[in-house]
Length: 473
Image 1 (tube, rainbow, N blue to C red):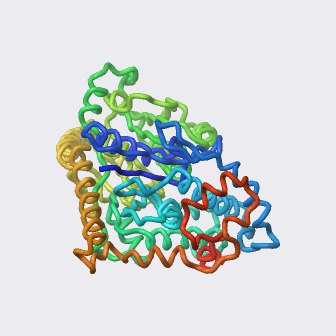
Image 2 (image 1 turned 180 degrees about the vertical axis):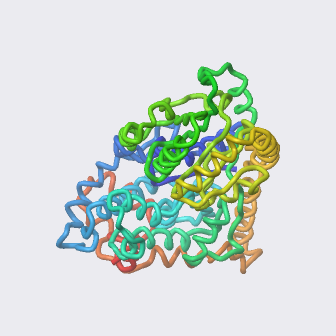
Image 3 (image 1 turned 90 degrees about the vertical axis):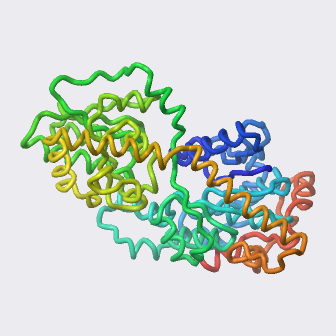
């Protein structure tokens, strides 16, 4: 069996999604299954196969794409600068995928809607395509807008060119795929709103390599417990979407009536300076400690008493599972896939999102009741070790791969003329056969590269992609 795991985004910029890809690919390699991982190096502008040294330089086609698809030629692409950047880079990604090749794989597991749709457009031989959405493009886009403009309304954002583009890509990614692997009921419901049939889903939660976790946890901690203080921990990227500002607001409320706690924040990100500034403004310097990047999270959590995940949107953070494995009661925001990770009052707690007062109240309760902390933390550890092991996740995911590969082979042999691997192969053909303006040979790229690409892409491949332009305008 030969599997391709692919993403449109930069592999090292993906946070928990990179952990998902890395853990599964390494587990399969250890068990004799060949897995390639393809992603984008955003800085070097390459599409590459991890660990093999095979790459496609996007600069070989991007200048031609930019000079051809100008504001005059495709005005809708340039209605938003970032939209133009994404779509032209998506074309370069498609050509990179064609150049590197998709036909040698038994199955492709796309990790986002953009890669799923893009790969489907350059397939000459149909390879089973299973897709995972690890979040929502349009909702994350709205949260980015909300960060810059607190008065922004979601319904207004979704009518913007970029908001429409994200929704279009999410819909087309679904139409291009044969089936879906998702981690939570939230992301499944979101995808069903874009037309994904319920029967096409396999729900497999994110997991942790328990052997590796135990090895890291066994190492001596470098993070000493503060005297007479209970530690409230957070680990993750310091970005707006993670809701750390809500945790700091809750800490400011909590310190008004108790002093026996400290917030430990581990991680780096673009919002780090602002969060440190917020800490000073709210006079929290005695209550908050920023540790920066932490290489050993299990060791870091040894002296923690409570874990908080206040994210505005998070599918299923690995950090929550790591805290559960440490035997710590967790508090998560009631948003996205996080409520699926706890049994309320038994293995953790759920609080309303962006509600600092509710979070402060729950923290106060747990700080006041050490026996509850111990009981809930112990139950969380037992639950996580039973339901969140990498071995279980990998075996369940492999079973999905095998099912779609088997269906594909039966269909090829003509033994199952009705083999409908989701919405069907016709949906992918529809995605590829839309009206357009240019065939590839009309673009000003090198003749050698052009000949290579023309031999690998479908005959009806066209640019710009009128399916996106039509539905995104």
